Image (tube, rainbow, N blue to C red; front, side, top):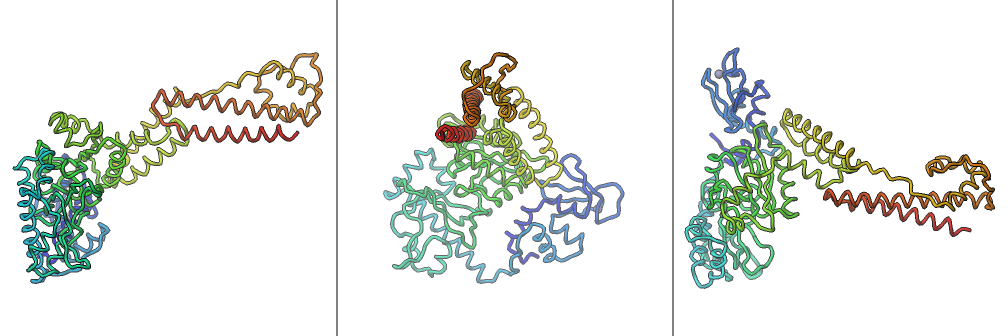
Length: 540
Ligand SMILES: [Zn+2]
C-alpha cells in the first residue's frame, strides 16, 4: 500500500503519540497501562476501545477494530493513506516527503550500496588480523574486546593506503561515491577512512550502512563517521540499536552511554539494552527512536563538567516525550572513568550499582537548578526558578506538567525559603564608632540642626545618645561638617559591605556553594564607595 519511504511512516509513528492522535476524536481515560474510550467505529455507551501508548496500537474489544495512528486517521476520517499521512505530518510538524515509488534504478542503487559497504567491511575485518592492522588489533584487545566480540560487531581496520578505491576500481565511480567510503580529489578517487579502527554502523535490518572510524595515532577528531548518504542519516542513527532492540523491549528500558566502545562493552556485560549516539551530540530523533519501544531511559554520562552539560542537554530533549509512566534517570560515572573502565576495573556489579542509583529526572533538574544558581539570593532564586519553569514548559503531557510544577513549588517553599530564614538572613550590625568620632558628631549635631535633619536616618542608626547637655559647639564650618558626616557614612557603608562579604564567604564555604558572582558584586560596590570617599576628601 505504501508508496512512501518506510522511514517516513516510521518517523511519524515515532514522533506522534497514539494517545494524542486518538484523543483529538475520542475522549480517553487512563486505566491501568492503557487508555480507554468509546469506540468511534461502532455504537457503544461503555468504553471498550483501548489505546496502548507504549505499543502504538488501538484495539476495540467490542468490534475488533485495531491498528496504529495511520489506520486510525484513515478509518475515523474516511480518508486515503496519503491524506492521513499528510495530516499526521502536519500534526508532527514535519515536511511531507515527495511521494515516489522506488524506481528499479533506485532499488538497484540501494542493493549496490549495501553490497559495496558489506564487502568493504569484510576487507576491513580481514585487514585487522594482518601485519598492517596490528596496532588496531592491539588497541581493541587492550580495550577488552575478545575475538568473538570483534566478529559480532564486525570490527575492522582501514589501512593507510587507498584500499577501497583500489579494490573497487572496476565499479563505477558514482556508485562508489554514493557509499561515502571514497571521495574525489585533485588526483582522483581516494579512501575517506584511512588508518582507522572501523566500527560498522548497522540499520534496523542488520545491514551495514556506514562506518565510524577511530583514530589510532591520537589525532583529533577521535571519531569520524561516514557523511550522510541515501541510506545513512547520522542524526537518526543510534549506535548499537540493532543489537539492543530486543533487550530494550524485554528489559523495558534503554541505557544511553556516551561512547561506542562503552555501548559495546555494556552490551557484553549484561546491559544488552545499551546504545550510544554517533559522535557526542544526542538528537531529538534519537530520543524519538528510543521512546518508540518505551519511555524508560537511563542516561549514563561521565561525571565531569562536559558530562553534566550533556546530561542537561539530554534532559531538555527528553522532556517533550515524558508521559506519566515514563521513567527517565541520570547516572554519572565519577572519578574520570567511563562505563568501559568501570566494567574492567570494578566489574558488572559496580556498574549495576551506578545504573540502579541513577537519579530520577525531577530530582536531577532540581539539583541542576540548585547547583548552577545562587539560590541563597533573590536574584539567584529567580534565575533558578526561570530555568525550572522553562524545563517544565517543555513537557507536553499537561497533567504531568502540572504535577511536576507543584512538586517544584513545594520544594521551593520548603527548601529555599525555609533555608533562607535559617541560614541566609545576614544581619550586619552597624560597626562600632570610636569615642572621638562620637564627640565630633555630637558637636556637629549641636551646632547645625539642618545637618541633623538631613542625615537623621544615618545618625539614628549609629545608636548614639544625643540627649546630653554640655556638648561643645564644633569648630568646623557648615560645609566641612557635612563633609565629615558624608565621609563617615561612606566609611560605615564600606565596613558594612566588608562584613557582608565575609559572611557570604563563610556561609558559602559551609554549604559548598559557589559565591564568586556575589563577591565580585560586593567588591565593585566597595570600590565605588572608596572612589567617592577619595574624591570627597581630596576636594578640600
Ligand atoms: Zn468498536
